[in-house]
Image 1 (cartoon, one colour):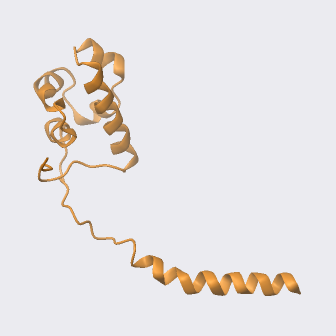
Image 2 (cartoon, helix red, strand yellow):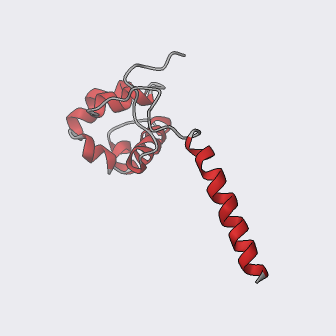
Image 3 (spheres, rainbow, N blue to C red):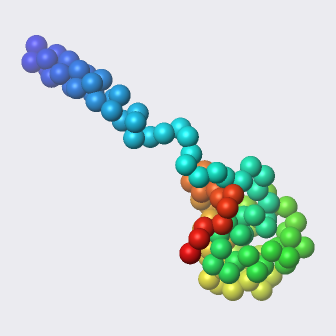
Length: 109
């Protein structure tokens, strides 16, 4: 009997607090994102000097979907420095998981 009271109290508490959480998470995004993402938009979104490798990656890799599955050894063979390789791989992983997308307008430093 005591367990039923505890369970009912927990259910009543969780249902009363659930509407409060809906205002914390909005379905509307405050920053506009680029709809079509290609290699130039992706590297410009990363910034930090990675955008200098756009012509090289477009020529050698060609497709954005291929960039998403490219490994570090391929980038190393293309002559991309370690710091830029790490940034590219970090953001491709985040992009595949849906945690990051390049913004429509560049971020002001």
